[in-house]
Structure formats: structure tokens, C-alpha cells
Image (tube, rainbow, N blue to C red; front, side, top):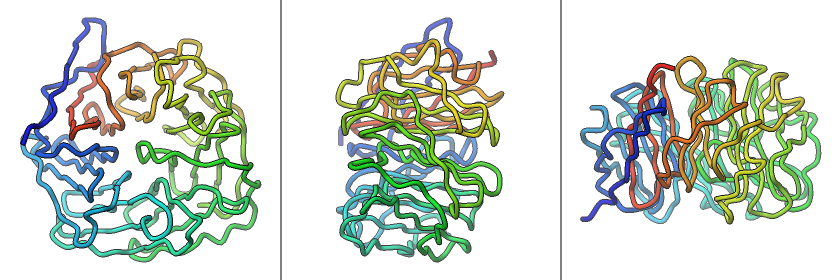
Amino acid sequence: MRVATALIILLFTTLMCAQKPQNSKTEVPLRGISAVSSKVAWASGAKGTVLRTIDGGETWETLAIVGADSLDFRDIQAFDQNTAFVLSIGPGDQSRIYKTADGGRVWQRQFTNSDSKAFYDCFAFWDSTHGIAVSDSVDGKFPLIATSDGMTWNPVAVKNMPAALASEGAFAASGTCIATFGKNDVWFGTGGPAARVFHSADRGKNWTVAETPILHGAASQGVLSLAFWTAKDGVAVGGDYKEPKKGENVAAVTHDGGKTWTLATKPPQGYRSAVAVGTAHALVAVGTTGADVSHDGGNTWTALFTEDLNALALVGSSGWAVGPGGKIVAVHLDSH
């Protein structure tokens, strides 16, 4: 089977090196990626695809989930070479969560969405037994489910949450529309009529919301990805996935936990669907028009290359990015 190859451009000024593209043995679009270490990573995508490497990407193994061939796995979270959760998107029972504890040989279906109006976009974890997932808005509210034992998922008992705007929703572009930090903080971003970031400091019971200056107004515009490296410092990226070359108002930063957001003074080169934090708080953002790096907390960004990518995950100075056509690229952050 032909595997899509990637054009890798190394600029002498760049601080991230994209290594030789890796053989995923698939051509389906990949949108989920979780890096556990420099050797272990898991990826996910369309047609029920789940992949794993335990040798730094020299080989990627395809892992089958019984009865999931038609699902689109947009988010994956792994904790070691044996343990991983994967989330599929879609209306009604297409939104599901599975877990494996034996390296992908056996998968347990932990959650199946029973609300025909709900559409779960992404999930995030504080640790291997505590996680939270968010759906697009339903009747003015954002449904949330959470696990406190790594086995069962239940609706979050929300006490206070600002109402969703009409047609406001999250994005399932990369599995990073929701982010956690520490033991209790969680944020999720939205788009459509406004580009907002919701924040909870108590694992989803009480929420506040803040508007960001990221491009919004159309259903294809808004905050697509969030990353935090302290409880106060974070970055949001997004833009318009229908006009990915537009680089204005695609990144914003916060230094007060998401209460206020300020546009990057030198933004990424276009729409960005995922952002990740690496060593020394270096930030890398990717999208269909390429990748960019920031070493000042997201205020200024430097273009890296023009590879078409959907998502990335970093652990320390290394990680992986994934994209269309089964694309997997190993990345490495050089010292600044």
C-alpha cells in the first residue's frame, strides 16, 4: 500500500527538526497523537484506526478495535506502552470512548453517547484515572462527562456554567480543544459566533468564560487548540479552517489563567489546529499550511516548514505530528 511521503524542509534558523517521515502503514487521515516518551507514542484517525509505536517510530503497529471500523478517532491519550484511551466523534452513539490496558490487544468500550444532539469533540486527563470530555453545545449548555476511576464515565455535576451562545461549539480537529493542568484546572475553547475559553478550577463543577480576540464569526472560525504550562500561562490557537492561509488573529496568550487573552504580536503563518508545549516551555503549533515555533510564551512565532499537518504531541524535546494520508512525522526540538 502506498504511504504518503512528507516534504521536510530544514531551515538553518529553525529550532525544530523534522526527521524522516515514518511508515504508518495506512492512508487514512490521522488527527489524534499522544507521545508518552521518545520511544512510545499512540496515534488515531478515521476508519477506526489506532496505531502504536514502542521503538521511536521505526515501526507502527495497527491495533484493531472490534466493531469500530466506521468510527473516526479524533483524540487519543496514552499513559504508557500498554494503557491508552481513545475517543471517537460524531452525533449520537458515534461518540464513544474505549480503553486498553494491554497494549491494544483488548479494548473496553467505556462510554457510548446516548444523546442524539450531543457530539463529543475531545478529552483531556489530569492523570491516568481522572479525565474529562466536552461535547458541542446542546440546548444552551456544553455537556461534559468525566471519569474518576479510569473505568467509568458519567455526566459532570456542573453547578455553574455560563450559557453557550447560539451555534457555539468546540472543534474536533486535533483532540486538543480541551486542556488540563495540575490536579484540578481545565479549559476548553469554542468557535462560531465567538472565540471563547471556558475555565474550571475544580474539575468541571464551576466555570467562568472569557472572550478571546481570535478570529470568529463563522462556523469554521474560533479557538481550535489550547495548551497550558502553568495554571496561569497558556496559549490558544485557531483561525479559519476554510481559509487556512489567513494568519491574522490566529493565536492569543494568557498569563492569568484564561481570564484575559492578548493576540500574539507575530502570529503563526496561518490557521493552526493544534499547539503543544515542549522542553523549556517551547511551543509548537501546526496546521494545514505548516508549523511554527515560539520561545516567548506564544507572543512571537517563527515559521518552520509548510508541511500539511493536523495534530502534534511533544514530550520533552521530541514528539510526533500527524496529518492526512496516514502521515506521521517525528519531530525534535533543538536547543534555543
